[in-house]
Amino acid sequence: MDALFIGQTYIDVTLIADGMPQGDEKAVAKDYAVSFGGNAVTAGFACAKLGFATQMLTSLADDWLGHMFLDMAKKYAIDVQPRRVKRSSLSFIMPHNGKRAILRARDDDYLDPFPTLDLTGVRAVHLDGHQSDAALYYAKACRERAILTSLDGGGLRSNTHELLGFIDAAFVAERLCEQMKLSAESMLDYLKSRGCKVGGVTQGEQGCLWYDETGAVSRLPALPIPTAKIVDTSGAGDVFHGAYIAAYLAKPQGSWRDHLTFAGAASAWKIQHLGNEAGLPSQANIAEMVRLYS
Image (tube, rainbow, N blue to C red; front, side, top):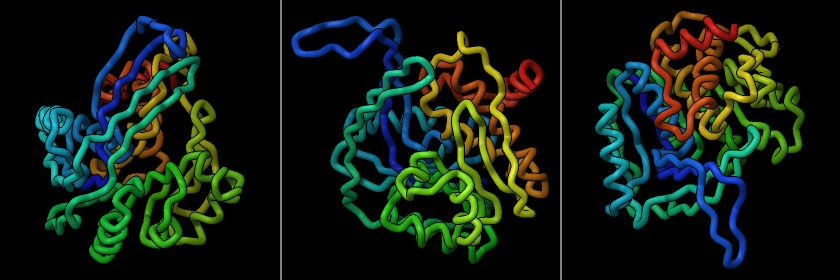
């Protein structure tokens, strides 16, 4: 396996509608998509779509949504290492004007300890903070083996501070800055203080404020996708993470600026498509985004 992704599985139902019905109202959505979801899970699918052997340690229930997820993973030749839960987790997502409202139902009451996996051949591990015990265990194990460790810091969790001490590449959401009462610039200083070799704050249409291997801070602008072409921004950050892992795997000695530029173009493809699966870019799709919008 080239990369290991550890997180929480969702089934995402994404609906394009004028609004959410209230009370006894009824409404008909204009379009919808049903797909896999979850931060590290979606990143893993993106990495697999880009041609890399992907293993996933994630929650899985023995119900029809769980079987649906396994069918999706099989399509992309993803090796699923399950951690059992009673019920699948579900997200309802409503994109609107470049934003998205999300309603989630989650079962993260794991019925088993996390499995101990053979890391032979693994060159990168990506975490989203779910399964905090497994995340910390594998971050430490991979650091000891000089395997790249990556974190999607979407929100503050009980062991975020400790976990960051074993992370090489940390790219966090503005939500984490808000929760920790830090500016984006102060967050970069915090990530540096935890020993992260590269790090950044993703800021949607403003791109990413980040620091490189030398510690130099700069802004990577988002590609200027016309507003009329933006369909669904949900999952764009997850695709970004999966794409920079793929770029790293393709060129481990390459610069992180190149890895993130590639990832930004992958996100630009995602936001023009409804649902996570339709938004997974190929290498050719990413090249097209660079050609059209760089």
